[in-house]
Image 1 (cartoon, one colour):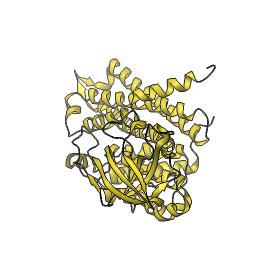
Image 2 (image 1 turned 180 degrees about the vertical axis):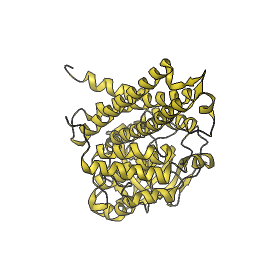
Image 3 (image 1 turned 45 degrees about the vertical axis):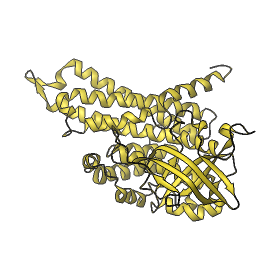
Image 4 (image 1 turned 90 degrees about the horizontal axis):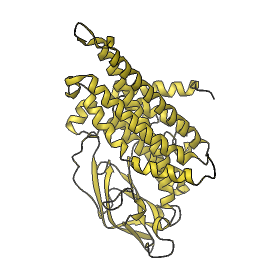
Length: 387
């Protein structure tokens, strides 16, 4: 095993770090306070290739590995968790279109997505289908050379501010042969399609620098050529996308926790109580050591899972689920501990810790809750004849 980054990876990391320090970190607090979605900054990130990190180079993507992507997202999230997290979602959509789309779809949508000219939203979750995603009810009925969509989606990142919706919809009833997960197909839906409307921007605990809305489809008609792959393949596409998506969001947790650890490290050395710096108290030294240890353990799990996904290992889904569960739990704890070490100051918006805690909390829920990650891991383990 070689844990050293290649020269190319070092360059990606430095580029992402520089972008985070110059474009994201100085604005993260105001974007959060003002609920501002920084589309212009995201498009500047696209100029560096960050909107098509692991997308097909024939469509303008960088064609990098999932490990490379994890390294980049970890750096971006040190500047602004919320913006980095949206960029991961856009990358997941872009990859699905350029990986599973046909030549015509790649030509029509690929370059616009990788360049950031068009931003995308991933539309799987519904009001009655969260963890049980295969129970989704949004329908896409074939009508000649078109599909007509009816139904709704919930908790959609970027909704109302993006140009493209990657939508999972049912083309076969669950009561029919091939229903359930096998009855779901994937569609590219332009957001300005007549019959597509959006709910209010949800008031959230965190992730305030990106909009989250419901999407309603009322007889929304799209060309049949906008279906990705064959009917019934959509759920498998969605799950393949989520393996990488889970690593992406875990990587955002890594970066945020690293920023929180750095803030705590600095504060312990600067703050004095009872005539000495906080860094001189052994109890606080131990807490800092534990935070750094948990963060490094999480980082290694994410990197390992990414390497398995890159080489198509049969255990990749298992390790992606385990890495997502462990990293998002551990990194939330690191951020929360960093806030605690700041005392009352950590609770003030003058300091970044309260925002970091709010932003990483949702990582334990989205891309599959951590309870679902445990379920996936347990099922994969029990499929084995031996461990």
